[in-house]
Length: 582
Image (cartoon, rainbow, N blue to C red):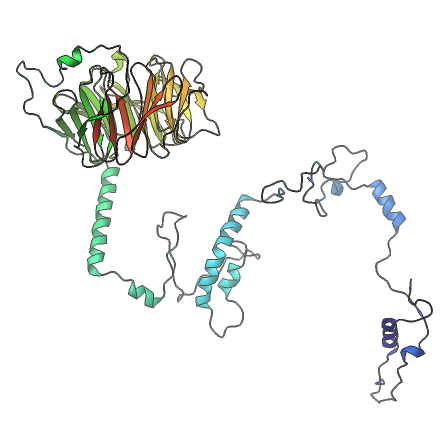
């Protein structure tokens, strides 16, 4: 009961309400009009008592008794001291939740539990989430497309516009969205096989006529498509195999004693195998033989009087770096850029892997191709087994996430190591050639026992980056890896392949490039190229940068020490040149 009136005086609003309550209908039941009744003035009204029902009657005692028998179970409750009902235990969580309070623990969380605000968990089916996510992304495009269907005099939005406002491919009623009208502008993806490919712009008929190709342009496009289709067909059928040949560029194959260029000169044979290395300071020679970039260079094992280079112009070239410093032989047989090369222990054979999906074995002296190996997958690296009794075995890291072990004598793969989740970049033998270390684009380092396709150790940390190149220290106790975060990391071989946190070489820029690493034969200096065309030299003990050389105009992708000469370093870059520094 609410009493209105204060001090015997009636307010104006309550007077109006009283007059409205006393107002009657002037028309009688039979339709005759009666005399108008006078409406009393507010001053003539007397204070009255009103009853306003603001809420239904609630039996407080009964509700308390119910709550005492069946109390509400909070979500954070872990122990109950009564026998709850089924509907109380499985009742949904109700009521507002403060953003700063955790639903389960009830503790304060500082106002936000996420850097964008307050995030609360919810349960949603995967299909429902994907359906709503893609539906909202397409809503605006479908709304624009439906504008072409709607007529100027149509009342309300079109059916397509109404469907576009739904949450997914199916509306609230579950009925599929209506198809577009025949006259609407058609939209199609740029690549039909790619679901994430963008749409072409919906053009009107006038615009599409303006963008029609001329016969000359259409002929060029048809010829390009035909060539691409032929290349794909050759790749699928193994047709990347081309004719192998070699070209000798010297004056004579033998000298006056009948010796070929494989025989080392006298100054190399007189050099000491164990010597102290020094940093180079000046450029002594430039080899401008490749028409495109150079991807890798390797010195001839043991003597180092010959230098082998792999180019992006599909060619492999052999250079004399000691006497005449000229091009000796070119090896032709790949249909795409050559990715990696590797000498055998004696240097009389070498392997090449190319983007034409083939690995080939060559004779260094005669230039003859001794074999071609392929699994129809893209090879990224190739490595001979360093053991003398296993020179017929080599390893290939491929883009299909596995390492393949090949036998040259049988021309067949004999083992597959397939625990990586990305393209394999490097394969390195260590620990007396009993173990293999592989790195891939999945940012993992896997250690294998030779011949066993199960990794014995996996190195994977959240802070790790991909390692596109790895080499072994001359003392065979450490592994050096070119990490993609602009640093060289070191792992121990005999301490369970743990990373040496104090041996980190920084200062160069190599992110995005597989720059080659090499260590001087005495183990004192570490050399590496970088993306700006420089070659860095670090001290192995202190990890400080000793010297930087401006070597190439583009990327300096390779740098290697001479096995015998104390201060000779060869570098190669994407500018197509090879340079000698002493």
